[in-house]
Length: 80
Image (tube, rainbow, N blue to C red):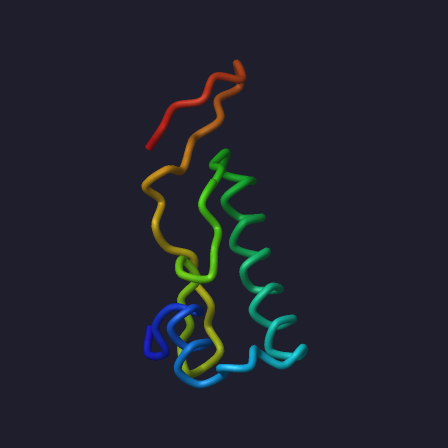
């Protein structure tokens, strides 16, 4: 992802914070990713700006699934 993490891009290019339109766009795509994970039965459990990657074309991806969990029908959680 060409822009790196959201945190890196924020610190490098937007020291006073992202504009509202940028925040809305990043959040929208992040929530779409979380919605997909939840439909697959997974919980990310570590969503933060350092785990959101940005690409120059506007693509947003979630990373770092080290503490994610998978929910099974029985309600048991298995760590991934």
